[in-house]
Length: 249
Image 1 (tube, rainbow, N blue to C red):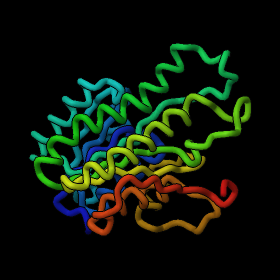
Image 2 (image 1 turned 90 degrees about the vertical axis):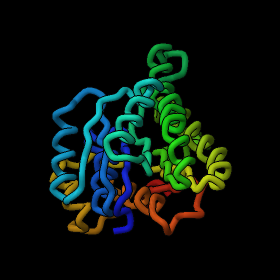
Image 3 (image 1 turned 30 degrees about the vertical axis):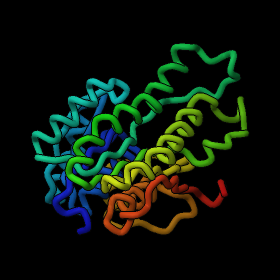
Image 4 (image 1 turned 45 degrees about the vertical axis):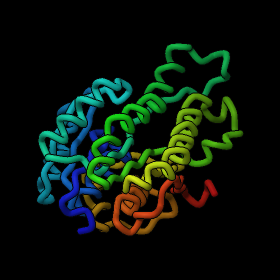
């Protein structure tokens, strides 16, 4: 197991998508996991139980990822509980509305950017000091496929969500090379549309018990994250790695 002895924080790990699969996959690779959730503790507890059933330790922690103080406190709790924080994955993100720009409510616009951009800033701000001090760290943000060159436009596609993902890509490309001197890598995984899966499906996928498919699952994104967190990716930083289905290419 490549991540034995490591501790990973995964935001948005209680949902039915990539965050949960990332948490399970990093646990499979040997890491202890901080399971972040915003509202539904019971779902986070179920994910923690699945992680513990894999022989790893899990800590459930509630925090709004757009709240910098809450994220700072969450990282402090993780470091106190486990003694360190080696990996931080920003999977939690905003919702979107496929509307023409004049029709997007300002409160919704600000909420999406807070969950996409402010949340990435808060996670980086909280996690980097400890990682720099220890001389090792992995930060992975979940971006979005082709967010940097979004051209579909409303009503076919949203404007708010890909803007936030493109900002995450910018942070990764800017900070990645700067942090390598500290032994820290900063990368992004940029999935295309990926369907949700049940917990049982997620468990089967993380164990490799699934039929081949033409379209990616949350597990495909999780495997990319796990690779970026491994020693094999020690000198990969500032990268945005797409995870897409054949229809999107």
